[in-house]
Length: 136
Image (cartoon, rainbow, N blue to C red; front, side, top):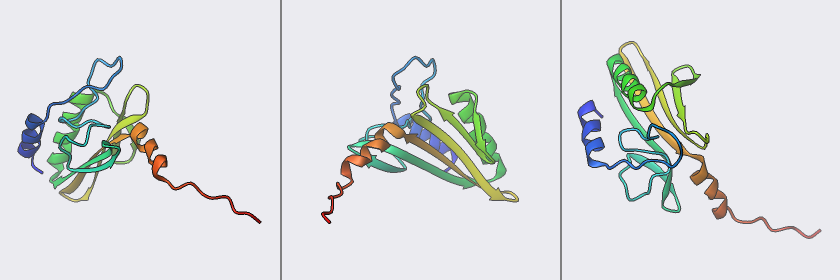
């Protein structure tokens, strides 16, 4: 997706802030971990009407990575480097994160932005069938 498409998506969405004491909203271009399913998402995993994971992907030149990095640092603040080609921003309580990954060779790159809400993800256990105890 080009930068102009990202801008259109951002304009169409009304970002909502996460609760907490943070001076910055924990949101990237209108997407936030745990947002309701009624809002737009590129690819999402939904539990009880809430998104546990939202994944955005794009490909392009090395300049795409640089623009994405600059944009995310400007909106989310300082990064935490998790591993090679991966940056992460974590919410104050550590249950939500936004992760930037990039991979590629020569002049070509794939960029992935993942938004994850562990509180929503933990609800998955409500749908796992209970194991029945076997009688010997």
